[in-house]
Image 1 (cartoon, rainbow, N blue to C red):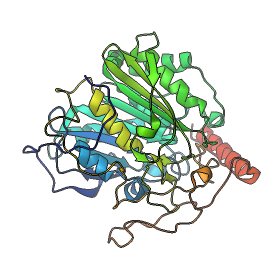
Image 2 (cartoon, rainbow, N blue to C red):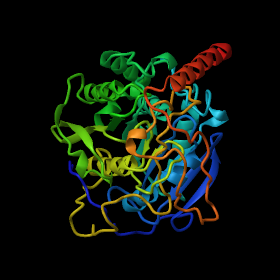
Image 3 (cartoon, rainbow, N blue to C red):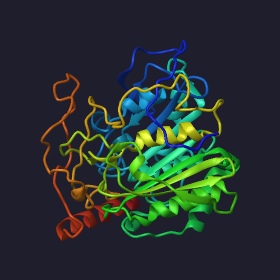
Amino acid sequence: MRSCRLIPILVSTVALPSIAHAQWETKQIAGMSVEIYTPAGQSPIGEGRALMLGLHGCAQTGANLRQYGAFEQTAEDFGMVLALPTVPGGGVIAGCWDYYGAAHDRTTGHNAPLLELTETLRDDASYGIDPAQVYLTGFSSGGGQALIVGCLAPELYAGVAISAGPSLGTTVAQIAQVGTTVEQTVALCQQFAGTHASEFATQLAITFTDTQDFTVAQGYAQINADMYATLYGGGAMLTTGELDVASLPGTNPAGTGLTYDDGDGERIAFVTSMGVGHNWPAGAGMGGGTVYVANSGLNLAYFAAETFTANNRRASGDWDPGGEGSGGTGGADTGDASSGGADTGAGDSGDGTADGGGGGSAGGGSGASTASAGAGDDDYIEPSGCQCRASANDRGATALWLGVALLAIWRRRARD
């Protein structure tokens, strides 16, 4: 077991079933359009490749994250298949995942298709997935959804990373203001897990917020971290230590962080960054405004991959990133030149989970796209969605967000 901050790696390859060389593909699985990247190599631990699902926020799609999320180097450096589903049926509203409330089980809402997607990819021999290295990450409504699925099926997910995700059991009216407690979320997560609750003993977690996120209450990240710490500690909080955010992967990441450790090493990382706003933390450093993907700061996918690989409690073998066979594949900037990255600097005007209004204006992003890596590629995906800017004090954006939130409440009640 290791607890360390890592460097880019190159792992030796073995004969693995493979669809082709490293590539993106789009598949229809469990009623969802899924962007899948398959790396050429394998994970440096365990047997085969790792798998990470990435859940977008409202007013985003899996295709947006594919284009701007800078996932390729993460996949290649860690032998990790990346799967980016788009919420089925257009989501609850405005492309939002249905994380709301406390009435969830494995068959309701968006839980069932996500579990089916995970199991389908895990069991597909062509991907060569190691079942002990299956991870889940999500942003905003996708973060709230990842919290739920990670609690419902802890036996499936060895690690869960939550970026700006509202805590378990919260409603659309509680997005911008904390509406629960650690004790309530612990009880709900245990309820969701049922007979699988013992699997929390080997699960890992990351929680993330930003000081410029004025959309999802920043306090939820602390509640989420303490929820995991209580679950993993068997009812008692784990010990904490300082995390040097500036040393983490990305483009000039800044902020504060904590690790939560047990007797065998790191279990949880809690990051409060600066300058990302309410955007997917890609840390790509490519510039230009797009759909709620930050162009600087922490690269969450890479950070999650290195943290989960270094501290995995389920896979065989230990990883020594500085040892023989580890070598380097590139510099410290983990942004991928083919995928680009961008900070919208924007509020999202159509978000049932309020993926707007908090934008990343402090992160330096522009309100309009000025440059996009991959623009010359045949598969280039034109940015979509709101490209505007909004500040926390923009009353017009706040009123618009409130109107969308009320519409989401009405729609859910009408459906029920």
